[in-house]
Length: 242
Image 1 (spheres, helix red, strand yellow):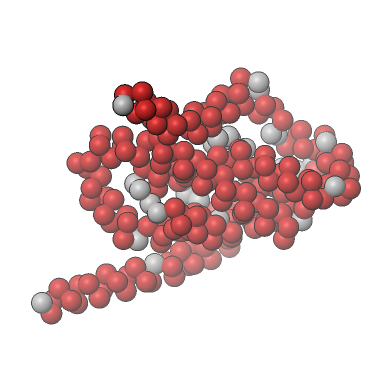
Image 2 (cartoon, rainbow, N blue to C red):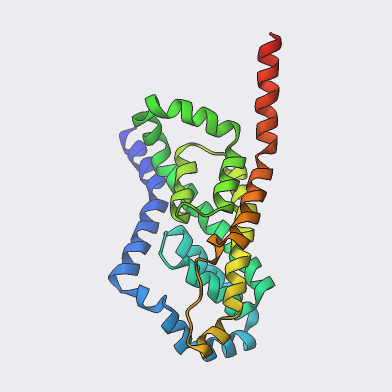
């Protein structure tokens, strides 16, 4: 009985251990030296030529790297997003980035859910009960807004919903829809990297927080809260009538 329990627990931790090992290897072998604008600029012609000759293979390789990077919480997702626009253009690049980011986010969500969810629920049961109750009622809207306006680190937003027991289907859909606008903006910047490199300039990675970009995102986020506000108003009316 004890042996089976240990084996089962190890299986629950296996995916998270693998992701942590990948992150450790990333830093140990100094692979972050390849995730730089300088590296992309130095190899851009080779990458562009290879992508043109092997488009499908290039898409698959790019998606695999992106999924692993997001799943293992490897820093440099913004550069990968820009690279998607640089190599594949705004439309195909956005599709590849959104799908890959969603898959990678779900992998880390699943790893944390399997390994830490039960432990977190036991250790923090007293102060998370109210938070979980409110989160579950409007989990999709909450996550959609946070994905839409990237105030918090992407890796953190991947983990917290897993600890709070968010449903997998809602997590995937909110992530997929929420990251589309931001991904398209950064992919579009990446599509113009060739001109930026030739001009000796640096991409404006803070463009998403400029008023002309941020305000429409905030408006969309507010619009998405209308169903939640309606439910709250309806509940208050029912309480008053009672």
